[in-house]
Image 1 (spheres, one colour):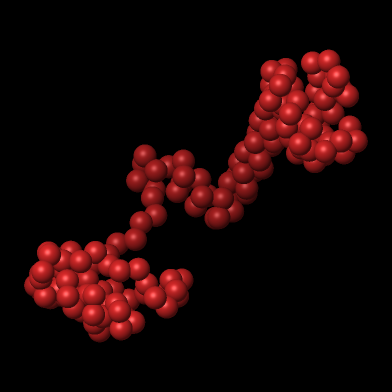
Image 2 (cartoon, rainbow, N blue to C red; image 1 turned 90 degrees about the horizontal axis):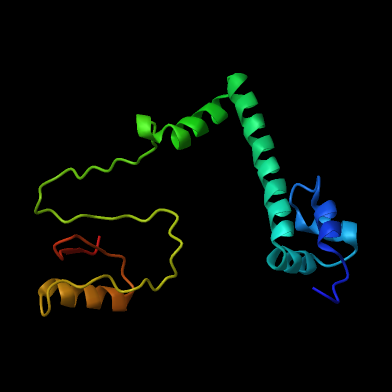
Length: 156
């Protein structure tokens, strides 16, 4: 485009060996990183050069990752199995178990609860049911409560 301060070739040259970090490219050209964004969006050749530079960074990271696995470093091995080995059954999961009768209320305890003191209203039970009225009363009083999937409320 006419009126541009830099040619696409100059921006592409500045992208080389930048790891795709726009601040580095902008510093090399003496402009703002938003200028780099504009060139990437306007010029397909600049966009390709930027994407290739980012891919080189990912390739480098993968090489280091493999090096850590070959060095038998457990965190790298665990991460590889949990992400790349999912189809072989290497998944992390949390198993939950409810011990008690099917009719017993389910008590949910929040640990390190991030919610504000006034939690949102839980889903009420069937319209006009006792559970629905108890839920409203407990929430409005600020009491901690849990409600199981059939609408039973436990105010613990």
